[in-house]
Length: 499
Image 1 (tube, rainbow, N blue to C red):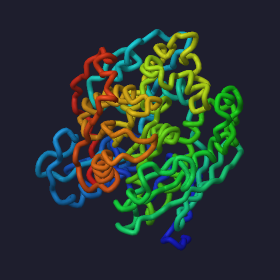
Image 2: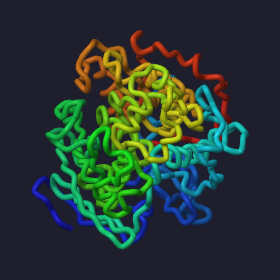
Image 3: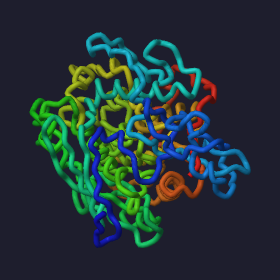
Image 4: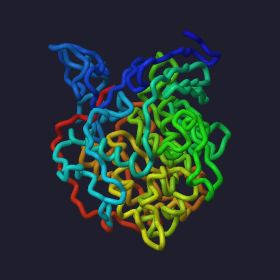
């Protein structure tokens, strides 16, 4: 045990795959686990709210949330539409999962190469599985999500590898990370700013971007700290460095991720940034939980950093709350729509910087033709990938390049999956703001921001989210892009877990 000047810290390490390590505060999540997994709560004879799926307990015992086994918290009434508890029961939330990828054990069929894909002019059906059948049960979402994840890796972001070894420490105001894979090793660190109110272990918001660096923290450091939430400043550019705009595509990517996996690895910069954030979470997870509560993590960023925040939330289910801010193309806005809006078209984005994988090139706008209609997924399915966890999309329709109408349509379509899973209150969207500069904070965001932090990072309330869209951001209504019906799914899976 080593102690830093800012409080207790722990030197930790793991000899296996990072996602298999345990320790720290228990995660209470809804996703599945592979054979041999440890119960993320406690094993007892019986309880009122067993976790799903049941793993890690001997015959005759049930894997339960700690509070479920000990009597739970004070009762409360959940808000309508939140997917929470009924009147008089313990408060329920949809937190981050216990592992990076709950669908890792799902079997996904081989995916077609880009040249073999059919044209899909409108938004693909998120409920339609790769075998052609549609979901009928909520429990099918875990593996349906894995199908979408694999498609996102193959066609958009590139592969996210799992390293052999992750070690590190959480000491005072710094998290140090050491990663080894393929016979190579890298080291990097992130800074922590702890709040002066509240009590450790603190919930934390990962900011994509270093303290004082490019983009800053668009939500405002003091606004987050005042809510008793720590800020983790993640310098993502250490993992993947942007080259010269309009001159980088086709060249090897530099950065610590590529030092291990090679500059020509399929992962674009967004995936490299997501991979690095997951390694930070690995170290937090391995620690003793005395500084940061790994079950209460969020991520945010604006513009290109917002694209990174969105990718981090997509590809690591331990993130309880994702807050992408004015991401433009490569983030929340639908690719099919940005090519029509002619704001930041797919070719502008793809050839601008290496944010997306080289694998995306077959779908790029070319010769006055939008080829993205052959992309078998769309960003509304990426929005849905975050379900049932918390998502707050913040947009500014007055900045045309940010393509807010395409972001609204994607968010509204993704919200249909939240609705079908019974957690409609876990997604929020806000674009009804006054005209202000790109990445500036809008006071109109405050209520939804504080509500989301209270629910997903502090576990204090269960108020439902809202979709608040201004007229300037609603020029592409969902009805123009959705030709599938939202099913009524059999509620055979509980996404909610008591703290």
